Image (cartoon, rainbow, N blue to C red):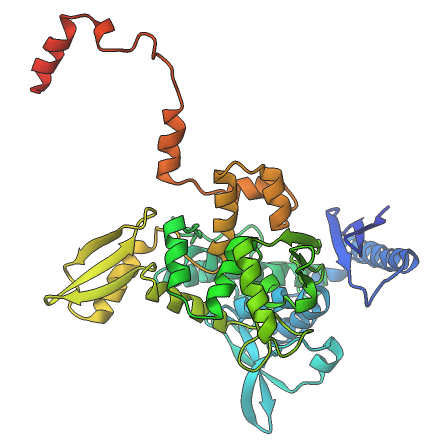
Length: 453
């Protein structure tokens, strides 16, 4: 017998499916707002699972097949994610599926337009009526039975030279989620990728934190308003999606804090973050120039929140601050310039490179094992610097909006080489008898003679 419970303002269902596996899912507000509605929905789901389980035992479902068109399956799944997932998640999953099995383009008057579903949030009922046309993806499959582990593994192997390991793993994960959902809904007989796991590259594309020297160089080399945006990331630890949706009513200069609203937070947990003096002064300067006192704190030129173009701006600022790896030509030879955690520029010669294209390819080949710097690295920098300065990890976890301290310590607390040196220097074992004189007057000259010093 299943149960319903409430968490973070949403109702959840806890029951067992037709295979006896435990299922826990959130109920959208459009389907159930009260406990009674949630219980009624749970009863319908359990009755449907019981009916299908009985039909399977009687052999009614033996005729089911995996010869189902990918386009029809993908269309139903995208509408399902649009109704049950956060908009940012649904958009990311659409992009991941478009890179594997395919996607849709809007067909307006016989002409291809933007991707479907669109980049803006649209009600599901309106999405159903939009004209669209299916475009096959890189896997080149038309039916589900053409999706095989060997085919997916070959696609992953071909993409390892162009994509980070995390990108490939995410795309395979979303593809498996599509097929798992279709199997549970009874649209296909079984998931052909059940138990399949792509062999990722040794590098998982991890992100690293910026050193204090790199952070200062980034702020000095960035124009406004991006300098204030990077400062806000470094001083609050907010996620990208949280900062771009920050509005002026969320900023309180009287309490010297800003609020991350529940609807903009990834974990649906509202939190307040204190402002540093430097960030407060920069926000006050922006407030005095703001045209809309109820609008976004960091609007783009059209007055709307930033989207994907913020990533390109961040990479441009990294290059201007000479933080990101780059190639230069000097004296007819190509060099790779990179910055180590101490802020020192390291030069490596690319001896086999003849053109800039060759140099760029050689740089990617040398750096694919190294963690990258992205906008999310600023959030990692916030957590790392707080923990380095002795702040309680529980406090850091609360500021980041994590559900557990383990998440903060495992993924966000980076360690610099100088931290290891300082930690070991605090040990005092053997100081009472570890002097050279305590080893004996005869032992020291013999050892020095052997080493030749």
